[in-house]
Image (cartoon, rainbow, N blue to C red; front, side):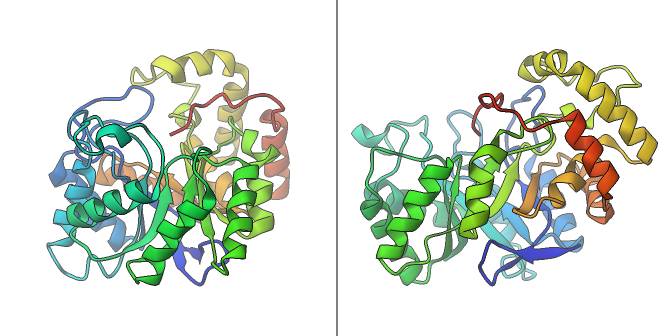
Length: 335
């Protein structure tokens, strides 16, 4: 495994981040990810550590409807097995999305952030994860109705207490990153160290705003949906997988010509489509790590091959020709 720094911090993380959104879910999400039992989730996490992946991503709302938080619980029970599992993991979780159970926040239920919600949900995440600290605590979405003075009061307090190391964001626009860092600077606080964003060969909209801003500010970019909901893993010389459905299948029809050209290029290179898509992200200077979401140990092991691929300049240029940076709205909804 290869490692890099998380933004301008001194924290080194694996170039692949293990995503856990499917852990504990019994719902099949066509075109996105399947469902992973707790037993298989534990196997995947053990295999990830053995492979050198030390960066894990989760969120307090991951899990089935009515069972939000079950993913954190699964990770917590895995930590409880010992064997230095907790000590070997750089753990990121999130706050800010709405739970289904209205007893959690009462009238404060609507999706968003506040000092009140951050503190309450942070304590709940610690209990579920069976840990006393979080390396990376991330805002799941921007909340423009709340002042940064309030947000930094909450997050800075967690960092100063030693229970959080770094603060990150997710689904932020460039202007939001600028406002966050400007406010943090006034408080003599380090501010954001990472931004988690949807970005891949098909969805390059972030190159117009978020990614260059993050790069200028020294904020590391963590990538979700690196394979564009499975589109960038399709071998177009074979029948389209049945698992590709819904929004992903509609996008395939829109981008069929590009996907066919891409698949042909991958065959020329002698690499799987998914490996090339991940290798392209790893070649982007602002990218810290793409998040992979394997549903089996075998899928995890397959993803590892992408780290060893280095795309040359002619190949990168060809990919730019097939997938030029768009000047339109983002085709992919937020995470």
